[in-house]
Length: 343
Image (cartoon, rainbow, N blue to C red; front, side, top):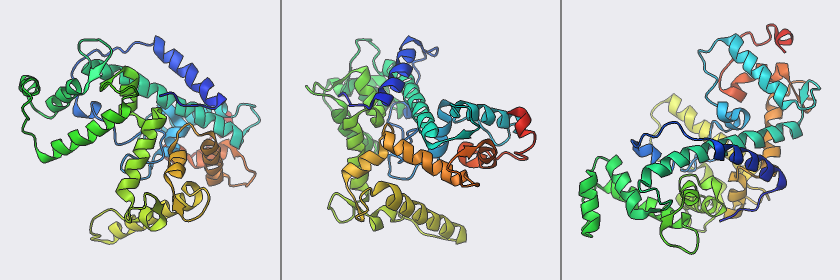
């Protein structure tokens, strides 16, 4: 199902996807583990996880793009610093030595597009794994065989059970997973429904952020899981409600306090756009849409505010280096050493 895109999104996505179409994966192995056959719990560049938890790595993902794993704690500080200096020079389009909110917004949209490109590339390989006859369409039964094989069942045993229309004995957890996956499968099957997924539909199945309809389905599932009074909306108490569990020590209590504090701030500052104390499915969908330019601008302003020590509404190189842990997940020691020389 086609999604309307603002011009900037079209330009960014069109460019990276055209480049991706010419690329061929080098790994043709048919061996796939279970994690490559099911929708991931974590989606790069999306603010919420599939289970409704906040994406703690979101800032780093939209700042680093496909290089999100390129900064490591044990990497040489000079090398990491040089990489961050290079990124700064790319974000600073007009080369005036400081990054504006508009420049950061543009960068965030480019990095989000990189995550989309990576998802398309991975999906092509995963689709080939579940489409062995190469006809470009995958039935639910074909997918179900591959999934159950990944859970330890014999492929012949599963195929025989499906052919004879006899139920296959699976454990309760696997049965629940199959039911949830089948729901998603039906949602990803664009009209007219034929229960056969094309490569594009399979991409929506694995990555709901690529389809307006599947993003809406993901939002519906999150609200269903968090909604305690059944009104199909989320109040602040519902959104900040702690996961089931028992706090056993002070560390656990601190984690709980942090959970509530972070989710309260996100709810009040960003998700509840009209500030009426209730989040609707439309508000949550808008908040989670990685291609929402307004969200990207808000994110850019937030990132600048975190590190803008001189309060000039811009980011300078020294500020990004000083707050490197926020931007990259890696704390650079002696950040100021030779900054200007390297730049």
